[in-house]
Image (tube, rainbow, N blue to C red; front, side, top):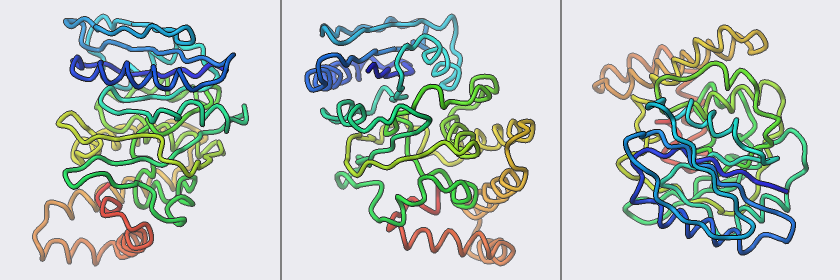
Length: 292
């Protein structure tokens, strides 16, 4: 089995040493007959990617965008060049655990599915697991939660995706604003009943650096509202979910910038969203639940 690790590269020289070491560790642990395809798509054309990965069971491809195209288009460019049955969209500053790819291969059912592992979130205080309750893991495949609360997947890096399950619409409707193209992908797949299957192991490290977009809610809101316009045009995606998603994004954006009185007023007009988000926050034991 071939797993393709697709990484959008943007001025990421400082991450390549750890990235190469990570791939080598994974390559050393997969079984004979399996292999890893590494695709680095350079979205900073003025900078050359400097990396070496000399392993018999690893194929390295470097693709150079003709100009800066943004993370969504860059991921798609890598996807189109991939030959793996499964793909992982891994950010340049994040890392897979040494047994991640082997674990994904051992759990693959070779059908339309997304394998989702637990993630460790790197913060000043140390590392924190993203999924900390059974309630939270049940929400991974709940499309209503994605529209009422937010994405249940911190980054595509802790997902191994059956490539044929990726809807063509995700490759045709391109997010020009960075930050939420993966959110768009999950919604499309969930609406098509693709199975999201949880693996109860921490196989991925999401490090908070200055370049993270996932922690910037203003950026992700703009990107989310952009793909909401695309969802309006996609015939099979339910209108009520788009409506709920827009309402949730609008409420949270106003809540975050409001003073105490503003927060009370806006929440009184959105009691259903407030209640669902507070229940979610309590049940998942995650401080990130409401903000994302």
